[in-house]
Image (cartoon, rainbow, N blue to C red):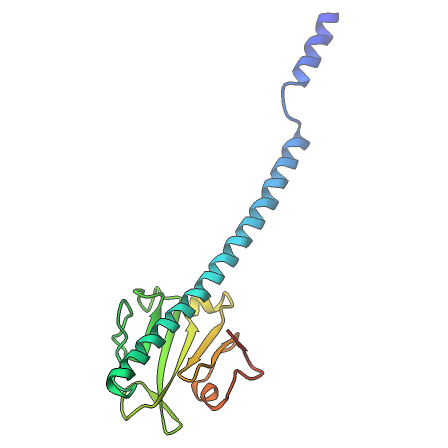
Length: 176
């Protein structure tokens, strides 16, 4: 009889109970939710940082162009940007219209009037970055950058003439 009770105790100690397995699954589920959330936030932040870098890079190209030609008119983006449409640049560099995270629109300003890039003698510029439709659902911000140094971020689309008319970002957006 002693041997029989000893075998039963031995069998009970060799496996995991259902409760222990459920606790392990619960802990793994919580950890995976936290990891996925952190990863999404990382991707969100990386896309926004990339478009800011691309805008500043284009800004340097625009200023280099103006130092050579004394106007912003005739500027064509270089180094990996899709420049088939001179007013639309895809971000990140080298991406196509369909694979881009943002579309950057360049507009020139002549006598206070915002126009498409090119044309008449342009003395200033406005650059607008809007998320592509698939990224707009993620809640990515729109960005604006001007030749006078105004840098704005907003969770709603930004209008070029509105940025240009203001000396700062105003109440509808914040500086970046």
